[in-house]
Image (cartoon, rainbow, N blue to C red):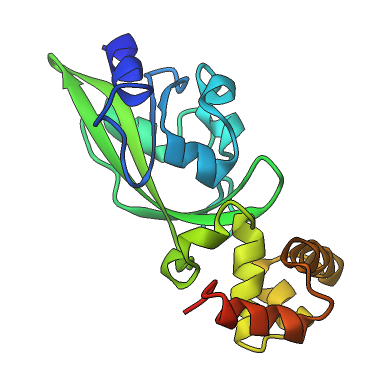
Amino acid sequence: MGSDLRSRLNGSPGADSAEALFAVDADQHIIAWNSEAARVFGYEASAALGALCYRLVGARDPSGRRFCRLGCDVIRAAREGDVSPTLHLDAQTRDGLPVTVEVSTIILASGDCPGPVIHLCREVGVAPETVLTAATPLLTRREQQVLRALCRGASTEAMATEMHVSDTTIRNHIQHLLAKLATHSRAEAVALAYRDGLVT
């Protein structure tokens, strides 16, 4: 079942999901990883498949407790025939950027035993509809988030607090953003964003 699921979710037309989706086997090895999971977490399928989910994703619950671990609550519930409730977890991308996801699980039955566990992950607090597709090839997800914050008039300190990073990291994102947009100031970047429809 695992190999069939892997083939259906990685390469077959119509088998993908609009949400980040990955599946693990009973030993918590990743057996399926779709293109949206690659975008959200930053790992291509070639790097994710076969990896231990708790080492790759390493998410924490809102209290900061390590949730993704060997024999996590989701896997334990699956082994007991239960379904885990929807969870809000804080993870990191491959580049070390924070990402908050809402995780729902689906357990595929295999006879009387639970089969692979599918995780559906939706980014929380991200409003992709406010940045048009035209900006996507140019700006990273974090740069889009910074651009939206600039358009709201947020300060460096406010953005750092909101995104759980340092002021220096925000300034670096802004410098990269300005360079990609060929602008020389925050105000110029905001004006260009509205003029060219990068934000609504």
